[in-house]
Length: 124
Image (cartoon, rainbow, N blue to C red):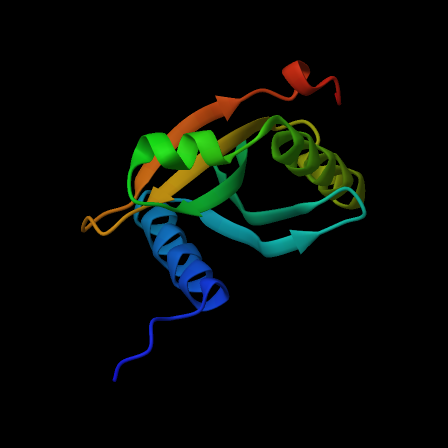
């Protein structure tokens, strides 16, 4: 009998696939699973003058993934991003962006750029 992977193992595999996608697109991974008192960010990546704070979701489809990122979760990620910038001020002048990478059973993950803005969260 084959056991299905735990949610955590599936999540880590999804994050690995998301990281590979970002690297193929020319991003440099700055941090994995960044944690602060405000929340956690799955991946923080930089390309050019952009720092992307990336939420990775493994779901059956894109719509389910987008719906799974609640307002509360967006506030926590945005707060964690603020903490990351405070700890690494050299990134403060770069453009910050909040992305979602959706991992499904499809071959390639889907990268949704600028899925929400920090100003909508009243953080920055």
